[in-house]
Amino acid sequence: MIFELIRLQFLKSVRSTSFAKSLLITIFLAFLALLLLSYILMAGIFLQKILGVIAEGQDPLEVLCSGLIFFFLTEFMYRYFLQNLPVIELESLLHLPIGKKKIMHMLLVRSFISPISVIALLLFLPFGIQVILPSMGMASLIFWIGNILMISWSLHWFMLWFKQRFEDSLIGVFIVFAVLLLGGGSTYMGWFNLGDLVAPFFTWSLTSIVPLMITTILCVGLYFIAYTFYLNNAYLEDLSKEEEVKFANKSFGFFSRFGLAGEMANLEWKLIIRHKKSRTFLMLSAFFLLYGMIFYENPQYQTEGGGFSFIFIFVGVFITGIFMIQYGQLFLSWNSGNFDFFINQKDGIAALIRGKYLLLIAVSCLCFLLSVPYVYFGWKFLLIHLATWLFNAGVLIHLIVYLALWKPKPMDLNKGAMFNYEGVGAAQFLMIIPMMLAPYAVYLPFALWVNEYAGLAALATIGIIGILSFKKLSQININRVLSNRYEISSSFRQEL
Image 1 (cartoon, rainbow, N blue to C red):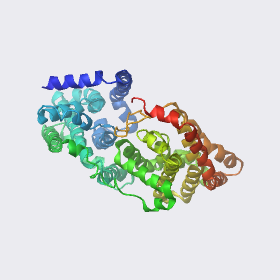
Image 2: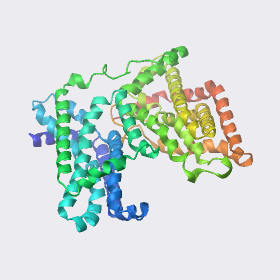
Image 3: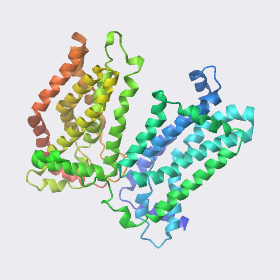
Image 4: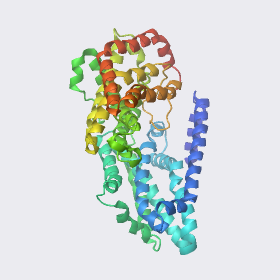
């Protein structure tokens, strides 16, 4: 039966009308995966020397044991965003006369066959061979590397359950934020060193098989938790339910003040919440609010006399406009499945575009408000965020939409965002250049001739002028869509 399931998956791929395109994408992603894994292997080979430079005079093994917990926290994060769920394949198999338990085991094992599953092995096995094997023997190496692998693979099975259980609710987002805060934030802020608390467990695994037995039991237990959950919920009607998606049918009341455009903004919000790819962009925007932590307290970007580095302008644009940039670059592709509906409505195109504008500006405003706590590092950061937000809302949003309207492509909203290039064309790559240059084209002349605050004032002034001219500027993009609506509609009917 396992071979029969494999055969069916093969036939499904070969008989697809987009087989050639899928094959090319698979080859490209395989090459990219091999390249990244080779980098990880090289990092593992030189890990001993790297730790020797970072922690000079300390035992590299002790340093690594105290830092392993941060590797697993990082793995938790990238598994959350990169790891795929086997739900789509499940929907195509449930109607067949095949035992559901066999399907579950096949899909779970198939999900395990991934480059992510060997990252821990490639990174830490070379170090173990160089450091542990000569001094402590083969048994210690097996116990230690086995313990690491069992924890890594436990995260795989846990994430299969976690994402399916909490992906459609804010609880999952809060849990991920809590892991990030208690894990990395606690050490960064000096509350407590999580690495020192967990290090004895990994040190214990060098001399005893007990930690390996504990983590093996944990790994097997989490596999059966994921297996049981998928088995109990493996019904087509459960997989297609939308009413259980939290906040999926909620509307923002203040949007109703903007007439038909406000209704379109509410529909766009429901689209974002109900679909996997758009939800991922929304959650990524929340994570990137922490982007300033990398730069604002870094001595490398501090200047004498209380000034600030030019890179802070980019950081401000990024923090207050990340959702606008990510979501806006695929402006019309989000509606590729129902674009014809808006063409056949009176003022449908204009309302759709103004509704998108309204939603992008509202989320950008929310990002600015959530970035206000950066004032803890100094009032200048609040001024940077205010000026860049005004520039985003008044100027950059129109530039993003204008570029995004160049030959938009269709997109499947239910697929994940990571390594998914549907809807992405040349415009999405080229728009990075003007998006990065536009703020500096306004800021730098005033900053160099007067001072940094004059540059911020110029950004804010241009942004306010753009906001006051919103109707005329947005009409330019509305006219572009109206003049090319049939060409756009035809491109959205192309096979993905």
